[in-house]
Image (cartoon, one colour):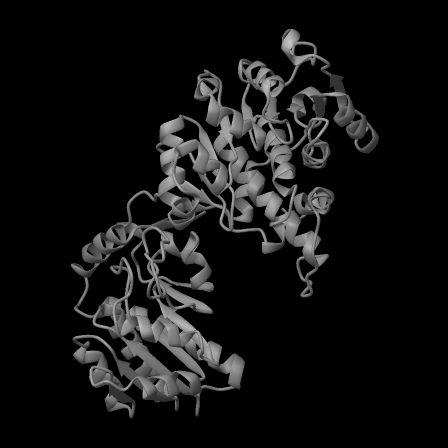
Amino acid sequence: MRTAYTSDQIRAAELALMAKLPEGTLMGRAAAGLAAVCAGLLTGVRGRVYGSHVVLLIGSGDNGGDALYAGARLARRGARVVAVLAGSRVHEGGLAALRAVGGRATDLRVPIPEQARELILEADLVVDGLVGIGGSGALREPYATLAGLTAQASGLVVAVDVPSGVDASTGGVDGAAVRAQVTVTFGAYKNGLLIDPGARFAGAVEFVDIGLGPYLPDPGVAAPTGEDVADLLPRPGAESDKYRRGVVGIAAGSDRYTGAAVLAVGGAVRAGAGMVRFVSSAEPVRLVRARWPEAVTTIVADPLGGNPVEEVGRVQAWVLGPGLGTGAEAHAVARAVLSTQVPVLVDADGLTLIARDRGLLRRDAPTLITPHAGELSRLLGVPRERIEARRLEHVRRAAAELGVTVLLKGSTTLVAEEDRPVRVNTTGTPWLATGGTGDVLAGIAGTLLAGGLSCYDAASGAAYVHGLAARLAVRGDLAGRAEAPIAALDVAQALPEALRVL
C-alpha cells in the first residue's frame, strides 16, 4: 500500500528527523536522490550526462536548495548547468556549491524573460525547484510565467518534490502549473501526486527515501498495489458452491436503456459471481438472457403493484441503478432493494433517485454509491467544476454527509469511508471514458460485495481490477505499446485475464 500525506504531516516528520541529524543531512539525501534520477534520465535520452544542458528553476524555498545541490552533482559529471534564480532569496549554500563546480546562475529578479525562455527551450533537462510542498493557491510572478514556459520545453521536465502550482495536500491546481514528465518526491508520497488534477501534472513519480518513515503519522490517503488487491479478492475453495462464492442481485435496465443491464450483468459474470440474479422489465431481461444465459432472470411487469424484488430469490448483495430510469416505477424498485438487509451498490439512475429522496439511504445494511462528478454534484448540491477541482475534499464530505461508502469515478478514482484513509486507484486508462464502462464497474463491485468484501474493500478492488482490464483491452496485453479504442463490453471480456494477472 502506497501511503500519502499532507504537507503539514510531511513537515512535522521532517522536523522530528532533522532534530536527530547534523544540519543539512536531509537536503543532502534529497539532492543525491534527485541528481541520480536526473542523471538516469539524461543517460537514457543522450547516452551520457557529460555535455548535456540542464536548467534549474530556483525559488526561495528548500526545494530550490535541493535543486541547486543536485545541479552541482550533475555539473561535476560534466553537465552544463544554469540556475535561473526567480525567488526573493536563494539558498546560499546550494548556489555556492553549484558555482564551485562551474555552474552558472542567472538572476531573474532582473527582468530577462526572453533569456529564460531561450534557456528553457534549449535545455535537455529542466528542473522545477520553484515552489515546494508549502505552496498553495495560484503561482505568483515570475513563477507563473516560468511554469508556463516549461510547457514549451523540448527536453524533459523534472519537478522537485511536487510540481510548482500543484497543492501537495489536495491535488488542487489554481492557474499555471509545471507539467512534469517526472516528479522526484522525498520521504513520502504527497496526496497531490496521486489525486487529480495534480496527478496529471506530476507525470511518473520517483520516490526517494530520506528516512521519514518512522516519523510519519497514520495516512489520510492510500493507493493499493496489485499485491494488496490480490490479497483482498475472494477465491473459491474445494468446498465452494455458487452460494458460497456469492449471489449478486442486479436491478437495472429499462425498455429505454437496455444496454446498461447487459453490461452490468456482464461485469458481474466475468468478475466471478457464483450466481447473478437479474430483475427488470421484459426487454432488458430478453437481452440479458440472450447475452448472458448464466444469469437467472425475473421479469417485473408492475413494480407499483407490490414488492418488485420479493420473488427474485436469495442474494447476498444488490447492484441498483444502471439504466433503471428515474420515474415512479424505478423509485419503487429502488425502495424495495434498499429496504433489504444486504449490502447495496447504487449507481447511475439509482443515484438520481436518492438525490431526489435522501430517505432511501436510511438503512442499517452497508451502502456503496458510485457517482461521477456530475452525479455527486446533484447529491451534494455543489457545482461539478468545484468537485473536479477538489476531489479529495468532496469525496470525504460525501462519505460523512451521506453515511455511505463513496467511490468517486473519474480520471483518478477515489474510495472514501468515514474515519478511513481515502483510497486512490492507480490503474485505468483515458480510454475508459466511454459509455457503459461504469455499468461494468458496478457489476464487478457487486460481485465482490456478494463475495463477502466490505464496501470499502469491494470498491477498492473493483476499481483496480476494472482499470487493469481496461489496460489489457486497450493494449492487447500489458506489455503492448500500441493502444486502440475500446467499448465497455471489451472491459468485461478482459476481466478473467486481469484476474489472472493479479
